View (cartoon, rainbow, N blue to C red):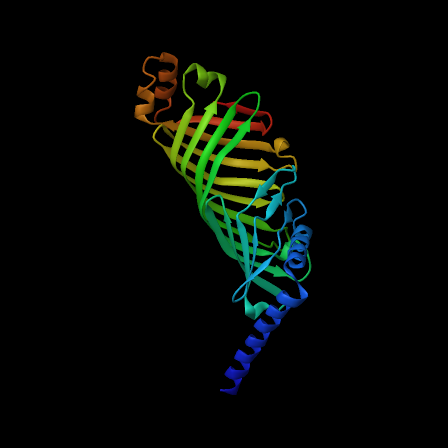
Length: 290
């Protein structure tokens, strides 16, 4: 019985020590600066700026409107970030933190395990995304202009690689994907809006190589499957694309173009196996071929 009592006392002292550190040694502004500095050392390509940190009983730290600055200079402001250390790991070589991020009308929750030091090679991350709403996401170049709205759910896991660098794996579900796509060809057909009810994505990231192992999209107009790789570049516009897939139009979509013989022939010839396509080049200058 003494062993159990001693264990609870130990946990109690650990919690008390943590609270004292937060209240006395690390006022909100200082704690936010230290946390941001540590994160920036781990992820130099993603800079974090935190507002003063507040203590939320019993053992949570919360900051409002943290700002993430990407390598291209674009800033993303989140709603809030809450960190909750697991007491049993406070004095171990690895610190486990539960986190909750509120952003884009949704929530990201999970656990990150951080080793001593600032090397990202030992970090483990498991997170769940629920109901993130992305509005008016814009992409444009000389060939096309895209505006998209969607809701994002899914899971994201990052594990350290031995002896290779870390590997991040993601499984995502997009719903209510509404896109407006403008190209010279589509404008001639008076067609610009494409809506999908479900998009399933599985991908792996290692050494700046993003491999899309599965992308299945379903909508009222057509279904689409896509696989391939993207070689990521610090300048997103220079990211190289090597993707291929198939588009399967629905019967109602084909019927809408009954008066255009060339379009109807294209759909009819490929109606069983779908219309294959490739996407190559770079994000800045993509090359799309049917």
